[in-house]
Image (cartoon, rainbow, N blue to C red):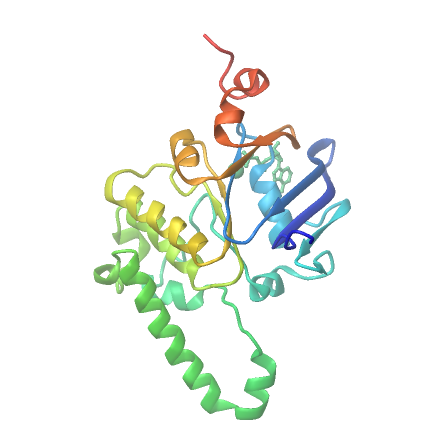
Length: 257
Ligand SMILES: Nc1ncnc2c1ncn2[C@@H]1O[C@H](COP(=O)(O)OP(=O)(O)O)[C@@H](O)[C@H]1O
Ligand SMILES: [Mg+2]
């Protein structure tokens, strides 16, 4: 029997910005229930790969698939609605909105939206708004952010801003979760919370990909990792295998001492 189709498949994707190659023949599979680590030095093209998957950039060549659906003609907002959720390296909350309103403004998944809204109209929209609020409260509680609900992002310490950014992303409970450096600048309880949430999302069957420089975090959580350099996927395997690689030691850690 064939293995189940990956949630996301990147096939032979290349992308240039002017003269800079940011993705070169990238092939990648992200499977349901797995936590895939994406590592590599700054400028390797990790965030760009997320941008290609979620539709902010279009590949020059190659294709990205959500299950059996090619995504190249699907705009970014629709990819979100199809269930591709991502966080941002620089958080990106609305500064003048409260935390809970940030969640309610976040991209969500709308299964069957057009059909239901067409048939039931305003009543469906009210029920939907109520469900969204309940879901937001639930996520805030999970993140330990219930008390921060009515604050603006600037009123929160950095770690809580990071949690709020992730909470906003979790409003989209689709199949795919892309996390861009979720651990950068956080420690202690916030670190533990993020770790637990990532685990729980994968256990619930989501396909999770994490860009992260924190090697122990990747080793702890990821079943598989890929190493990216100059727009190319240089190597993939378990984190142990990657750490044993001389090439990675050279390109990423500056050589073995
Ligand atoms: N919108 C853009 N226009 C031009 N160059 C870009 C753009 N986004 C990223 N780059 C370039 O692409 C390369 C990869 O960047 P990025 O994907 O942010 O790397 P990483 O996330 O691995 O640090 C860098 O050289 C960066 O300067
Ligand atoms: Mg980046």
